[in-house]
Length: 319
Image 1 (cartoon, rainbow, N blue to C red):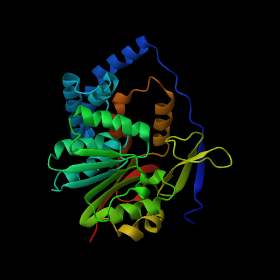
Image 2: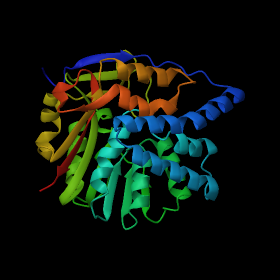
Image 3: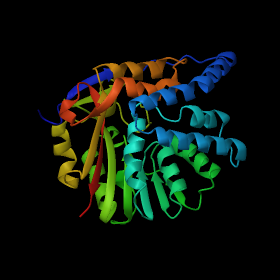
Image 4: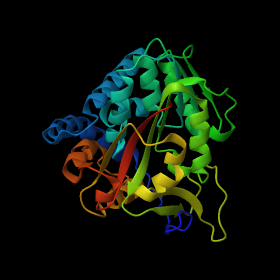
């Protein structure tokens, strides 16, 4: 199969109904009560990322009482009760297991969910973190979080696309990019740029969605305000990598990963059902996410073993 001729899925994004104040308060109350319960239940299944989930809660409580910057109460609430969703539990855990044991000073994050690189900078007090993200709206929220945590002197934010990031080659000891590469049409060039920015001996940590058979998704809206539509009015959203696509588009640059892990749905359709519900249901019970990871997802030995959709975490060393 030609890597440029994958199966394509076209998705019409449902509109989200807005909740009134009374329903929002009821939803928040339910989440406050049920979130700790589902976190405890998730321990039965050894769900990854539960320790990181506690760190998020502690951060939320710290921000609630300090109020150093105008981060919203809604954002603080989410930090305390449901900071991560779906496979983010696996992705945060995979990357942190590497970074927590490493000593480094120069760190670049390429458009990962803001919570991860900011918490890395908070925990690793001797590093200088550079965060790039071409989504200016998301970057503004990240800046609020950085200022709330008092990390302005050690975190610098730039609205760059990775391909045009004006840093010198070999500038960073660690580079992370969580569920980003799949959204970039020119993914190979993006990985090449990250590899060039990495110092010899440095480590690149990537996660991308995967499946036994590669495919691409297109949406009827531009999710990040960065794409041009095709002739049908749809925007490229993401690709799912199979083993062959990884071999063709990533490994020729990085070589084989020194460590990897695959985490995915146990039965086909669970991931899509969850995504559709999150995008359309204003009453979606986000507090169930860690427990759902235990009952509907698990580790697999390889991408080829996946019955449906999953995510692969990969660690590369630049020799």
